[in-house]
Amino acid sequence: MGNSCSNHLGIPPAKGPNQVGCTDFMMDHTAQGSFFRLYYPCQETEKAEKPDWVPSMEYFYGLADFMKINRTLSEKIFEYLFGSYKIPAYMDAPFKSNEKCPVVIFSHGLGAFRTLYSAICAELASRGFIVASVEHRDESASATFYFHEKTEPDLTQESLPKTSSAAVQDDLVKDWIYYRTLKHGEREFPLRNKQVKQRADECILALDKLTEINSGVAVQNVLQTQFDWTTLENSMDLCRTAVMGHSFGGATVIEALCKEVKFKCGVALDAWMFPLDDEVFPRVKQPIFFINSEKFQWAGNISRMKKLDSEVVQRKMITIRGTVHQSFPDFTFLTGNWIGKLLKLKGEIDPEIAIDLSNKATLAFLQRHLGLEKDFNQWDPLIDGQDENLIPGTNVIVLQSAI
Ligand SMILES: CCN(CC)CCN(C[C@]12C[C@](c3ccc(C(F)(F)F)cc3)(C1)C2)C(=O)Cn1c(SCc2ccc(F)cc2)nc(=O)c2c1C=CC2
Image (tube, rainbow, N blue to C red; front, side, top):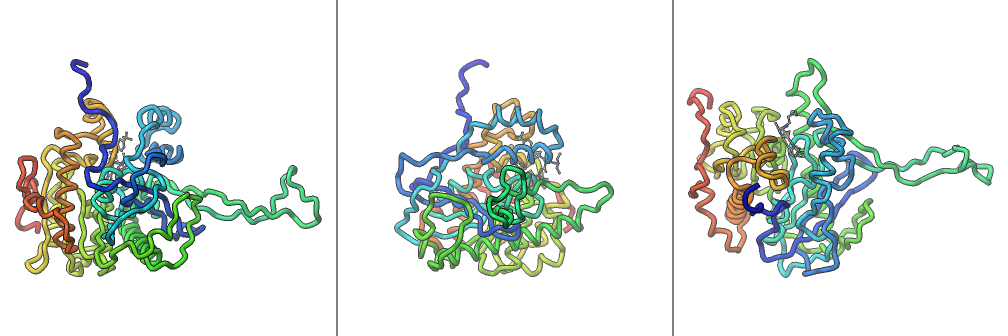
């Protein structure tokens, strides 16, 4: 088309002063354990590889199920469209920071998984944060897995034991958990409310694991990675922790703040408020920042956010002009303009400008409420929506009676 494509396709590199490393952590061989991708400031390094954006085909299968498109067709499309993308971070690069890092726990949206918000998580890590992007096992992810030991005797022909006792295989088997669709006639709220509670518990468990790792306790990681977790001893400032999430992950932010006061503040990206009980709202005491897209929000959803308005604690809201719900996950960077707009993966605004505004406003809010001594306060005006591409509060009309 016309002049050559000006915007290179790919996840934009982080803008902060630190190089970014990433590695994966899985606590044990159960679906109840903690599973997250860690993004962190790392040493300058050439030899480390940038990992594939989607770690294995099962995630694409799950995504196809979630999108209700046929697996084999989608396998080709996803592989062709997204198979070769790399994450803007170095896998298992050695951790490096000359100061204690504040911590963010990140919660993905419905049908997503831990790797899909790398532009946001890598940006925070490049600014000196340690970010754990949780992969939820509540059946809201497109796909996720855990291991279980296959200890039942394996009596298949080729492994007939030489000895009398049955051969016991203790190799690890990956069990996949796929997205749970709503059954016909099933009411959505009970499922989503149960899931948001599990999601909050999984964010709290991830924080607890990071706390153990920070204290130098020897922590087991059942994933065979080349990362040395002992280098993270005494690296985190666990008085400065926040919880952040997109859509269903935004509801998870509210639930997690309510359950765990160690989370000093929350950032909810285009939050989907439906899964939350009304009785949660008065029990949240921490500052919250709602960063909304222009197209996704509606009066009922906004009026639930407004139930969290407070005179005594900071509750802020901005809307980014020209954005859609998918302007926050990485997909928004990975297709050309017209297909992106067709699939509603792109809005009118340049995706990199949108995510840059979201990230800078987030950094300013985190500095303010975690008491950081950085220069993120330069972006304070963004918290009040002072930018040509921002709207203070919301573009959605909410009837006074609905609040
Ligand atoms: C028909 C399916 N139906 C399911 C209930 C609605 C599906 N849907 C709209 C979609 C996700 C969409 C998407 C992805 C990915 C491509 C691709 F082509 F790029 F792969 C295309 C098109 C399909 C836009 C949403 O659920 C929106 N949404 C999301 S989307 C989070 C997500 C999921 C997968 C990703 F790869 C990236 C991000 N997270 C939430 O927490 C909530 C909602 C709605 C309410 C709460």
